[in-house]
Length: 334
Image (cartoon, rainbow, N blue to C red; front, top):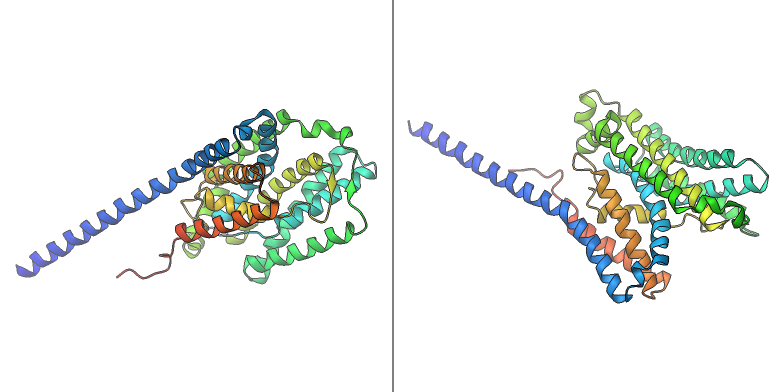
């Protein structure tokens, strides 16, 4: 009888502990889902005050749309990669080479549709190379992406050593139309949300991020799913690169520079888990991209030097990661 009573008390204690843990996890999840929105609102409000309203002027709203378009577009595609715990440090270099190819083809008189397709194709190839190196050689994706980054950076710098590649901006002003960008962005976001939430490509990537071994035992083809994620990311980077090129009208050795860091920062600020998994939300990446765009634009509008802006973003990135990173993964529970 005493043994039965002890067993009952032990079970009740375990149930109470489990309930407390679930309640704590639910509260933490709620806070993590709300904080990014408050962060975005705070940043917008702060810069409205310190810039005396210039932040929300008609001209600057246009700048925010143009700057945000590229980052949000890349964030949508990158969500699939980060959902399985992956990353890519070659985004900027690949985008730079894609813009280079687009510019050279235009100067050669190639029809615009082919130039656009070539730009997207370069980004898809770059992303595919990163995935292939990692998957086929069984090395960390960090190695694959750094290999691609180094190679593409070399191509870009070699091609622009003597001079930048420029086009006559007025001939392609229609490619910088805000309405066109808004429609394309809305379509890509809608398609991205559908694929991420309602198809196997999104669900399987989140499953791999949650527990890769369990997902594989359940029948998920790791290589195929991860490769598809990089293809989607490459496509989005390609579309963003097309409009980034036509907005700038020129390609230099620094074209695309910093894209990969801005995406990582968007992932963190949006509350998207760096390790991926079921808590991955594509909307988190989009909110993060908006936050990074507003932060970068606001700091520059406030009068900070570009190098100081990068420094502030770097410090903020470290602080957010330190506060939000899940250190409990892999620990034993006694």
